[in-house]
Length: 187
Image (cartoon, rainbow, N blue to C red):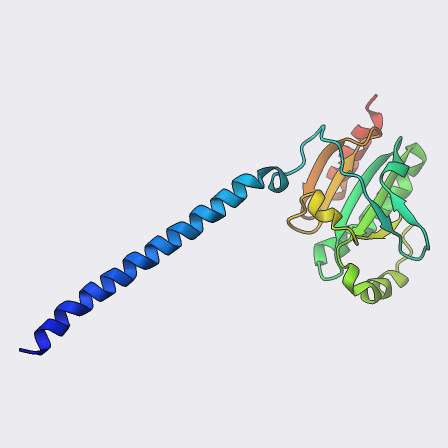
């Protein structure tokens, strides 16, 4: 008879533990949802017409820094990339050709590397690839202000410093060229 009370207690103990676990899980989910709600502006993508967040970042192979403000009057394609990202490495030469073809019309690419802590590795990669556009190091968490959630991510900015469009992931060259040409042709 002594074994029967133990059998009755175990289900109660397991049920109590399950209830406590559910309460803790529910509380954690509620806190996460509340945090996401508070940070909704930070987490939502930039929209067409939004002012592009300002930045000043160090350049690869140059002593000076470059700011987005210094590019005012030009259409700018901000390309966030990393050396560990194969689609990024595929896209960079294509952006180089786009830059070369359209720079005379007031267009530039700013390639913003997201690995400032591993600058020697990035510089080793860039040494064999003489891109004509500026390569910058994201030492100021610019990617967070642009709400970069994956790489590559590219943001097209008009001559007035406003976001025209965002591209998430690898983008086909003809799609990118069409968007840039449309921004260049805009009044």
